Image 1 (spheres, helix red, strand yellow):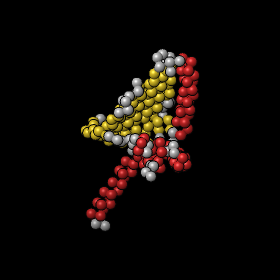
Image 2: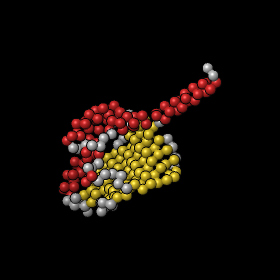
Image 3: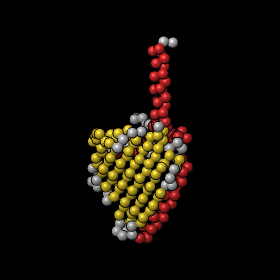
Image 4: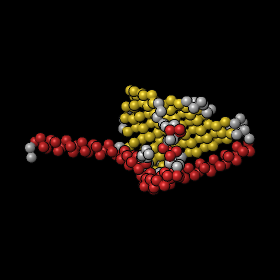
Length: 210
């Protein structure tokens, strides 16, 4: 075999080896959501090695929202791009999760979920913190609702342990506001999975436009 064929074979083998390593490199997704005083704030960060994306969305009490996407290289953010109309409006057919609620999509959703269950176990939650503070101005109704939310929190943590891998104990905290009435919802989470598993999940859950 000539020398250039050996060189080509070695080069392709090295590229294939590193390609397989990259496919197994963990994909980390972290998020933070806060709703307070009728305003919403969402931060999502996706990191794969030293590269990543950071998405920020702000919605004021009037319903006006802004979104911005940042490129990440290590701890640096060399560029940021404003995004308009990233999420479809309700009048334009609704978002993908709204279409899943339509009768024609429910059967498909259940089928996709059954196929995705083995892949969900490959997702590891390293953080899941949910905190809810609210009050209706009536102590009796507030206390009654707090009990229901505590029960729902137990269901959420049970489902996380059942369908995912959990590295740290999920935290769900309910803080009733006896006076005055108000609402504050805060969530912080982080999960990791291999890029190969992420691509498989994306392929299963991708919803084709009608």
